[in-house]
Length: 315
Image (cartoon, rainbow, N blue to C red; front, side):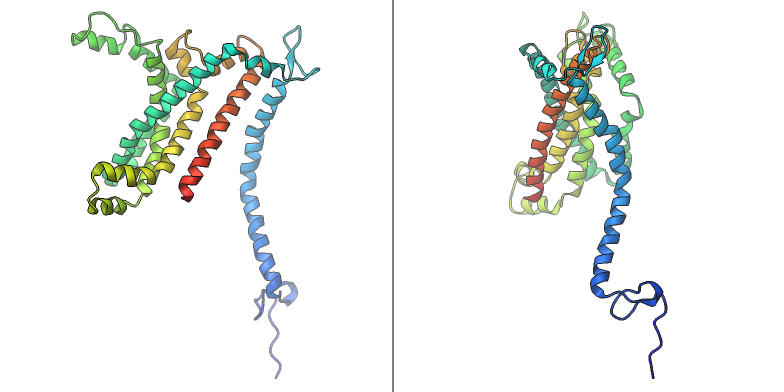
């Protein structure tokens, strides 16, 4: 007696059912499934790729093109004779102190953010208990207020007749106001306060994912608390430290609001120079060249840190 025909769209014995009751061979089915998965992946990632291309890559290309142009007699941008003269001018020795200040402020801010943020992240991870989410929300709470408003608040605190000097004089620690505002101290303080959450969050993730039984095993093998931290905890959380350094250093080196408001006119950074060239200077080609050089320096440091991070993760 003949077997009944396979219904249309149903799976056959040796393959996947096709149209009109036909059955695909296993080889065709093995090719079709990965293709469908790849197509679904492309559809999912396409909006993000288009967004980055439109709002990230396109502005970078525009800045690069503008940096190759010049200003005409009327102050307008012209690309009649494109060249690298703006980049040559941007590498003049007089800009080295501004580059050094940018690197110094960003470097000190990054180090302080990690030194302050690591104990906070460690405490939240180990002793936060059921309140971890609430504590992390408190860490991110400053983001609910504009960064500019928070910087103005620091100006009120640090000025000569501000909150800090009033407290110091009220308790008798000083008779005359101490100059806090318009100093390197105020700039580093403001930047560390602003970018500290960027360091705490990746540090918390790295510490929270760590297997704490390894620390207990080290203590069982008569390692001191310091030795267990240096040889177990610190190496295992190094990816979080590198990620925190990246997330802090990159925005810090391009910050011009804090050096401008808390550092005063005498504090010079590349970001402030770029801002002046684009606004009052109206020299967009020159400002674009300086901004592009700053991006290249930042990108080089980022790639170096990511290479180190990859070695730490794969080790």
